[in-house]
Image (cartoon, rainbow, N blue to C red):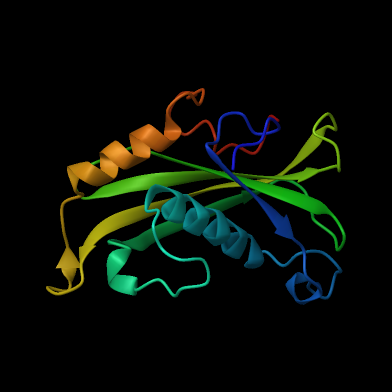
Amino acid sequence: MRDVRLPEFPCVVPVEVRFRDLDAMGHVNNAVYLTYFEQARLAFWLAIHPGGAPGEPVAPETIGFVLARAECDYASPVRLGERLLVGCRAGDFGTTSFAFDYRLVAAGGSVDAEVRLVASGRTVQVGWDWKEGRKSPLPEELRRRIDSFQAGVARPGARSGHAVTGP
């Protein structure tokens, strides 16, 4: 799940650009980038909550959070056929919320190939009690699982993964 091309991210997911992702200009539509972030967010979540059988549906009430905010900074366009990687990491924990930071890069076929920054983003998740229909404190167990999953990953300063410049 880790990739040397995005060493600051414990969860790195390859993304295939589909024809349906393109807009009339021939590049990936801006709204699709949030879907790419979602793919990485789900992979991260499944990695810290193992045990489900492959192909089994995930019950929504087991997610434990709702998305409260999403932002994306675009750095360069993506075209059909490009190979993408999206990195995801968690941080900025509060009592009821935490953030995921994302970096989306175009990467050649080799791990030695240079990457081009495509976009960076951030989502804020709020702990959610599905039975009560309101926000709830984040469980300590969630923080422990995330810390364990992210152990050994170089952690830059706050929000540095959400910048439009840099590798």
